[in-house]
Amino acid sequence: MSELVISTQEGGVLRLTLNDAGTRNSLSEAMMAALGSALDAAAADPSVRVIVLAALGPAFSSGHNLKEITARRADPDKGASYFAALFDSCARLMMSIVKHPKPVIAEVQGLASAAGCQLVASCDLAVAADTARFCTPGVNIGLFCSTPMVALARNVAPKHAMEMLLTGDIIDAQEAFRMGLVNRVVPANALSETVSELAAKIASKSRATVRIGKQAFYRQLDLPLEEAYAFTARVMTENLLQRDAEEGIAAFIGKRPPQWTDEP
Image (tube, rainbow, N blue to C red; front, top):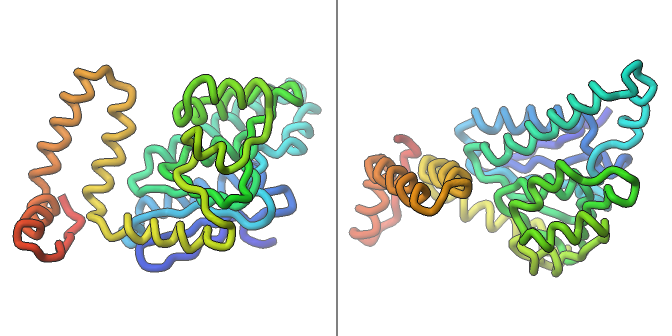
């Protein structure tokens, strides 16, 4: 059996590629476990500075594996305990991306549907090919995309999110860009190169500083304005006391490239 997630690394950039085109890269139990393990390993690996999440085949990810779900309706509880565990696993995977110490960039080459769209929305950045498509079509099959809604609603305006959720319509890459779901749209033949350049740029920064900034970004989003400023003032104070801030400021004043230590 081929690897469900192919890991390759160049410099400080780790590429995790979903590799289950037969199920349109569905977020099966096995796929979520493989991706979760790869992300955990990357968090502990100091050589990894940025993660790119890509996919092979016509779909980035079709979301949950509906055949896998349907098979569990034969369980004594009609699948209730399995469904609860499945969505809990998915939530942990999505939260692990948000809480990951390294930036995660989605490289979207095809359709990102339902939990696949949730996966894109959970990443820190997303770059889409002009051929990419996005949807949350659960309403069409009687299963509202309630868990994908969590990530989607934290990335786009509420009315845009509700339209996607209530209609199940597919939107193109340019519409996803207009809504704020993706950062950039590029020609399909330039997708990997564009993402690689973006990842390399981020990888050139201080790993310690990027980690501080990513963690602070998500935490302050949930705070009232006054508390957010108080929190980020504390973060900046702590950041200023780190070696890389001292080095970076000295390098800027001295008009020389900084030499990062990546240490507190």
